[in-house]
Structure formats: C-alpha cells, structure tokens
Image (cartoon, rainbow, N blue to C red; front, side):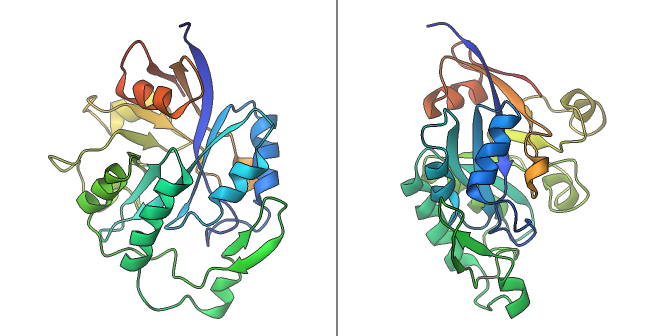
Length: 248
C-alpha cells in the first residue's frame, strides 16, 4: 500500500475548555481546520470530552478525520494529551477523570466559560466541574489510564514554563510510558531537540494547542501513513512499517 503524508493538528480545545474562547464551536473548528488544509484533528478539552462527539458529527461528510481526546492534568500539574479512536474509549477515561477532580464546583462566572454544545453550535448546557484543576492521579496513573483504554499518551507542550513535564518535574521519569512529546507551536522540533530534549527515543510532534478559531493549524505535524485511520496513526507514532512522524 502506498504511503503519503497527512497533515494533523491533534491538540485543539473547544468552548468547553475554561481557557477557550466561546467562539471555538464545533462547526467553526471544522471550518477552520479545512481552511488550513488539515486532514486530521483531535478535540482535546481540559479534563473532559463532552464536546468531542459534537465535533465528530460536525465533520461528517467533510473529509476531515476527527479523533476524540482530552488534555488530562496530573496531580503534579503536568498536562498530558490522551487521544482515542472512539467516543466509548474517551468517555471511559472521562468517567475516571471526573471521579479524580476536586468535588468543589467551579464558581458561577467560571461555569459560563465551560459551554457544552451540539454539532449545530447550539448551547445544550454548562459544565459545573472545576475542569482546569489538577486530578488526584499522578502522571504515571494518567498515562496508564490512557493506555488502558486504548489511547495514545503525549506529554503536552513540554517546552512551556508551566503545566509541562519539564517545568513541573524537570525530566522524563524513568518508566513513564509516553508515546510522544509535544513541542509548543512557536518552537521547531529541531530547536527543541537542541535546547530542551536531548533524548531522541520519543518522537516530537507540534500542534496548535488552539483556544481560538484563528489558532487552529498554526502548528501541525505530518504523518507518513497509508490512510487517515487510527491504526495508521499508531504505526506512525511508533515508526513502524515505514510509517513515520515526518515534519512539523
């Protein structure tokens, strides 16, 4: 089977993330992704996947592949992307994450910024959970939860000065079974290797970490694969069968 490059942005927030703008609704996400020439995206709100299904439905018939996910926060305040093939998988992770978040509700003004919508961009509710908080799971438990449910675990924006593996822990703990490391949109993978990450045992990827529609596609990674499928993406991340992470 012939291999070709597919452009992907696998770190996109929606209006459900408390730091996401209210304008980043499902149809706008899909529209902007297509305008930017993206072929694969993932919806990765903070500690929730309640808007992921709406984005998947909004993309139906467009040719854009959407994977559901979330950006989990460990007790050390390390952000980790969890990417999944199906809604069933990500919702199992969401159930566990919800049990590990603080029981205290977000305050009223904050809740207004955590908007649950449908594929038509209609508001269906608001999350009352404190989504921006850290869970009570350590980073090993976060990665294990993702893998136990069939997902890929990618350490988020490892070069940032907050909420990253290096800012919070200072190193990659031995035995932490990550699948890849994400570099912030403004830094090249090559520069990250030079100044931050000497260990090249894990692939580096770059995504937008978009919180506004205009940020979607500002960073992306090309994966050399046979098709825009979950199995092919896993092979590319692992560098197996000629599939690779090409460029960002």
